[in-house]
Image 1 (cartoon, rainbow, N blue to C red):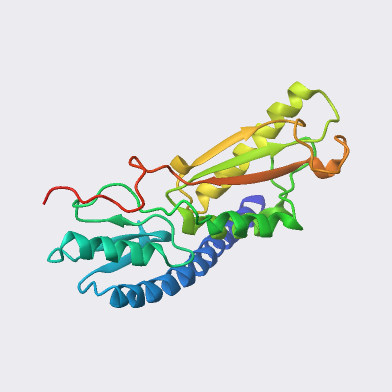
Image 2: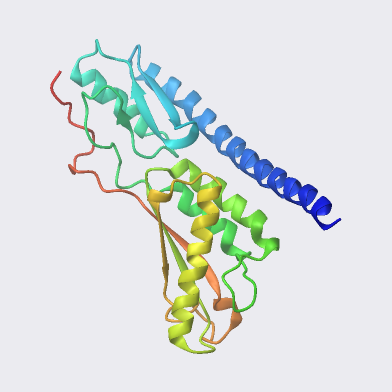
Length: 244
């Protein structure tokens, strides 16, 4: 009897997880589709025939497009195309696919929109955990799904996951617990399609309470995210073309 009940429960859990990943994928896909439409308009205005912007990385939508085509254009036209796509609000780094341009186009004045999106999600809600544990509270899984959706368009960036605790208890244990909780969130995001190489987990215990709160306030038990854009190898506003 116990085995017979376990199989449907496991199947149901797998189906729920699959549906969550699919929903987050389609939410990001809508953003990528909008940026793709805007990029076609921008490239047409920049008189860059044959150039397309692909907003996918390994089948996942992204805000960091790869430019393809345009082999017959001169370097001035290619530069104009890259600048036109990079200027679209919401676009991150722009890469050329054919090897004739190196690095990333990343205007330093543009903030990463996914940082704002995640901050907005966590403004009124918190990823919660079982008491004195690193197990994510099941009631917070919907929020984790939403965070994954907000982060997915910013693939290519380093995403720092920072765990915090209040000041109750032993601080050495608080630091360890805050790291374990950040690592649990990291693992959850990996399962939702965020590449593990771009995720960094750390725990700082109770050393940084929320502004205006006592250090022992339970509201200090939280996870924060910091989206750090990768620094180009060459600090130029637009990629320098390589040899043809």
